[in-house]
Image (tube, rainbow, N blue to C red; front, side, top):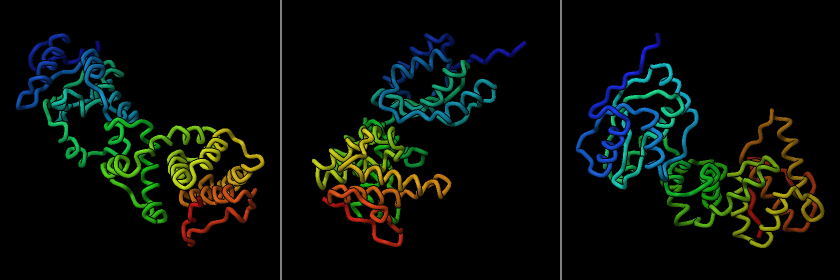
Length: 295
């Protein structure tokens, strides 16, 4: 006979009683953590009511946690589920989602009433990337946006070839203070990716940069790219795709991201010149300076 899961909790024993107790603690936080057994019903309730504006879920983690819960190997540790003083779930969504998926309860400490601003400090020691921070701040398409912020910043600072990383909260500051319109370019980048396979983060950064130089031409260029129009005055786009495909075929499908960016800039410059372009127009070596974006 299968062993029944341990439903022991600190305090009330029914799902409804536990939910009421957690609701009470979220509004009137105790000084210390409390240990609860979270059932799938409780987990789903907490996710539906309190999981607003959290970072993107981590499917790999959810699967791993769910497997442990289903196998009965999940253990009570010092890790906590955290609710902020804004009555929002700020840490623990992947564990709660795993509970729902596995259909099995798990035990956890829960901490209540942490200052919402404190999560910026807490996140510094966690595996939260720029996409997570942007999502919590309310942005969408954050995987694309985080990559775009990094590349735009590197182009602005003349450090594209260095490929420096940008810290998560620096990304948030940059998009708020220096690149507030950049999020508008993630949708067209996704459309271009779906047609061409060009990385959306790079595309968003470059279309934004082209727009800063020549909004009218950039709109025509990006719309043609997204629609697959490579005829006539948009021939440079067709030649760009061909040159990148040729390069990928000769290197096991890989194209260095900075080389790819340089080639796209060269295609833009050819388009601005009103030329169809030749293979020579798209040649760029990492030993050269990164090409200037024409306007």
